[in-house]
Image (tube, rainbow, N blue to C red; front, side, top):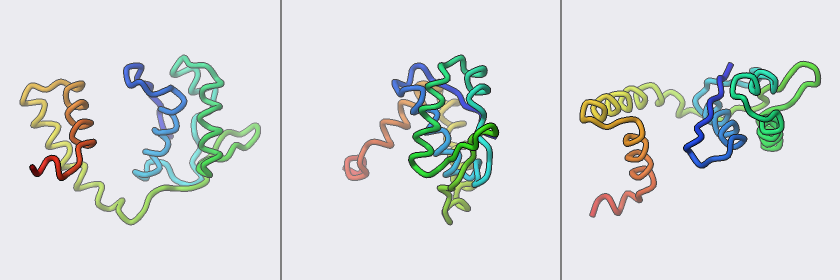
Length: 130
């Protein structure tokens, strides 16, 4: 089961953070069709957020065809986002862990690493080559 977390510094609304975390878990194969999402009550207790925030996230997942509520039981994953590229995740994740280790040894903290990654991710390849 997925464990949600919220980043108050991200600038992303809490409901959207929940949606993004489910989508990422589906992409990575952490969640599969038929898996149950945490109940609204569980998420509210763990994250100390408004139940309507969780309901809004779950409604968006339902609208996207990724989850479906079962009254009295909970909300379940109804589709997956994984594809054949899932097999490539292991080696890429190992390379990324190596990069993270090198960045930390170079003295970067988590916030600096995230900023570097975000800036690099958003920079078109052509700009980097010049």
